[in-house]
Amino acid sequence: MKKLIANKEIDVNEEGYLVEFSQWTKEIGECIAGECDIKMTEKHWEVVEYIHDKYQKEEPLSIRGIKKSGVINIKEFYNLFPGGPLKKSTLIAGIPKPKSCI
Amino acid sequence: MSTKVKKMLFILSKATIENAYAAFVMANGARMEGIESEIFFTFFGLEAIQKKKLEHLHVATVGNPGMHIPTMIGGLPGMEALATKMMKKEMEKLDMPPIGEFLEILSDSGCKLWACKLAVDMFHLKEEDFIDELDGILTIGDFYNRANEEGCQLLFI
Image 1: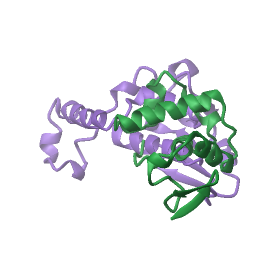
Image 2 (image 1 turned 135 degrees about the vertical axis):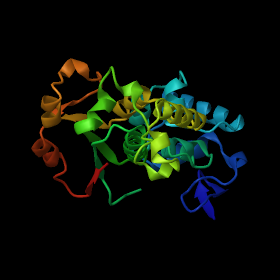
Image 3 (image 1 turned 180 degrees about the horizontal axis):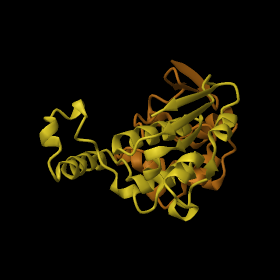
Image 4 (image 1 turned 135 degrees about the horizontal axis):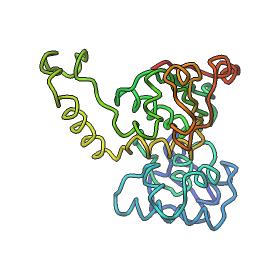
C-alpha cells in the first residue's frame, strides 16, 4: 500500500515497513522516527548506517550482532529505540523487519 | 504499537541446556518486542547463573524421547557431552550466544535476573557464586509481587 511520508508517496507493507529500499531517504527516516516519538540524533544515524551496511552485505541483524558491532552497546540501543529496538531501527532505516528470533 | 502482554515472567527450574535456552530466547524475544521480562532461577535452574557452572550445562540424553536414542545408550559415558557438543555447534550456526554471553545480553536489554532464596539456601550458595548481572535474591512472594500488574504472564519452565 501507499503511504505519504515526507510529502512523498512511498510503498509500505501493513506494518509500515518500506517495500522498496530505493525509495528511502534521510527525510523519510526522520519522518518515520517522528511517528515513533524518536528524535534522531547523530548516534541514531550511526546505527542506521550500520543497519544499511549489514543489509547491503545481506548479513542478518541480531541483538548479538549489535553487541559486537562496535557502533553501539545493547543498553544504548534500547535507550535510543525504545519499545523494540531492532523493529524500530529497521523501520526507520527503511529495510524489512528482521525475521530472527534472537 | 500496543500489545496486551506487557510483562513476561519466567521461572526456570531446570539445568538442561534446552530449557535454559527456551527461557532465554523467550525473555530476550519479549524485550525485543518492547515487552518487559524477568527470569526467576530456582532449584536446578540456578546452575545457569553460577559462574563456575553456566558453561557446562548439558542436554539430557536419558529420559528425553526427543533425542530418539535408546535410553541405555543415552546413559553411556560421554553421550551427554557428545549430544551437547552437537547441539552447541548447531546453535552457533544460528548465531545463538553461549549461556554466559546470553545472560549479559539479557541484562543489558533490561531483563531482570533473580535467584530463588529457598533454593539458594538449600544448595548453600552465596552471592559471589553468581554472575555479576544477577539483580538479587528473592523469595517467591517477592517475585509474585513483581507480577502484580495488568498484562503480566508467568511461565514455568
